[in-house]
Length: 167
Image (cartoon, rainbow, N blue to C red):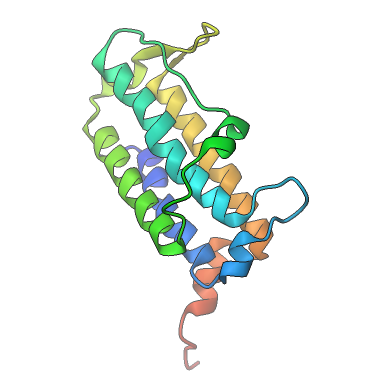
């Protein structure tokens, strides 16, 4: 049986697509406020964080005993990020592909592997279970950010697009 947290992680690509599918290029590039990331950068952050930070931490924890893992700070990432695949369809497709790879690894975990440990350079210890919890909070934070920008939830966007039903 698949862990509910894994199912939640697996659902994020679809939720993102529901939110941004109708967004224009202008909407994707307009920051909600001075100094905040526009939606396109939020999408790129989610994609890049998946394969540069979160999944490598997961993989390292499975490959060794209590490995050192590192995470990229958002400000550091923005300055040096590669914007070469920032089209809306590319971002959504790339994120979905990266997340599918993550979900496949998580679905293979044995119950005892959820408690495998890792640590940061500051020495903070945590487990795969704690990493996944942080991953879910990160997804939720950015989904809420995009929902606020577009003025509707992913579910509201989905419902709005459903064909009208005869009553």
